[in-house]
Amino acid sequence: MITLHQVSKSFGSYEAIKSVSLTINRGEIYGIIGPSGAGKSTLLRLMNVLEKPDSGEVEVNGQLLTSLTPAELRRARQSIGMIFQHFHLLSNKTVHDNVAVSLELTGFPRKQRRARVMECLAFVGLEHAASKYPAQLSGGQKQRVAIARALANSPQVLLCDEPTSSLDSSTTAEVLQVLQKINQTLDVTVVIVSHELDVIKSICQRVAVVDDGFIYDTIINEPTGIQF
Ligand code: ADP
Ligand code: ADP
Image 1 (cartoon, helix red, strand yellow):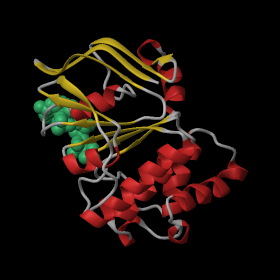
Image 2 (tube, rainbow, N blue to C red):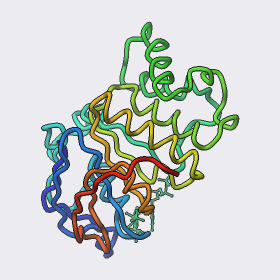
Image 3 (cartoon, rainbow, N blue to C red):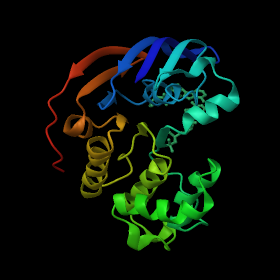
């Protein structure tokens, strides 16, 4: 489903990712853990080529992303959703319109947009908030809107960059429950970057331990369940 083959990435003379290879299977919840500055976020951003590798290959959903033209890459990215620590919602748009934006960008049929937006908001438990603005929501609700936006185009993969690092423990549980439900009911492969061991241990089945641009170990984890 996701394969990185000897991928390297430098920023100037700083080698942030050093010839990393990994395979993430379809349907997995895969964790990436390590200290701040380890290269976790860069590794995640290499998986949808938001960071272009200096060398090596990235394959997702059977497509070699590193060999695509920019137009082909844009199309391939429709099946790769992403969420961030700081949500990245548009503050001047309603919850509904934040989710609708991703459908507009991909040319989803106009007449079906509202129904699709409401379906995604219902999935994350926020239909009632459709006409609110992000500033009126809690952190956990904002992240659930970002998840609804990421789901709108029916991705096969969801990349999560520190999805709970801005949240308190009860809203962390709320967001992890939604991520688990996406994995189980929509058969979406989920990749979670976090520096929080409890978050990773709660729902991830395999965990890469990253430091200094390397994967030091890959651990099989028996998820502890969501208890925060
Ligand atoms: P982590 O997610 O584990 O905290 P990052 O992948 O964000 O680590 O960063 C790894 C290293 O690469 C850090 O030293 C960071 O400062 C550096 N880095 C990340 N992105 C950039 C960039 N766009 N330009 C320069 N340096 C960067
Ligand atoms: P978010 O938490 O919303 O994901 P971050 O605060 O992690 O946002 O950082 C987002 C951006 O900053 C990324 O594009 C990352 O590549 C860039 N970045 C991180 N470290 C550095 C750095 N040392 N120099 C330049 N850019 C960096």
